[in-house]
Length: 123
Image 1 (cartoon, rainbow, N blue to C red):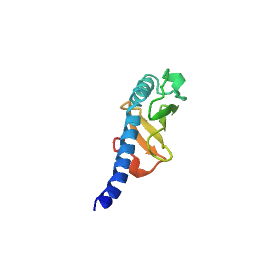
Image 2: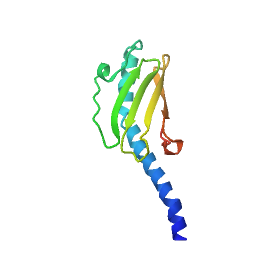
Image 3: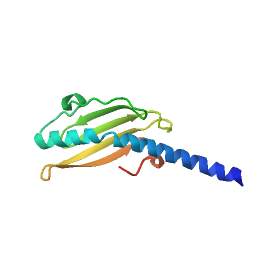
Image 4: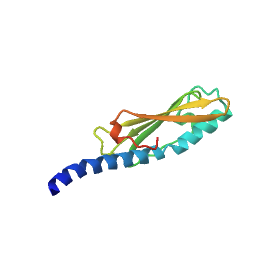
């Protein structure tokens, strides 16, 4: 009975742990989202968003090896290259924005190249 319970609990805990690690990775992009929003509100015609153009430097963390900004103000992108999340392989998370020129707000949509069961619900 204990063996069966453990056989079911260990994969569930592993999936939960991976989701939590990816959630931490997603929360690290808040400064990037804010920078993109302010830059695009100020100049909606920016055509080449990048870390360098917005003056953002991201430090490697336990779960993130790199964060790359791209696209333009109409469709900005943030790519999170993860590491040590527990998933095999570590997923790449892509956050794509949709800038509304009237309200001057950005709606964000997240996708991952990893397993859906590992994707956190925060996005």
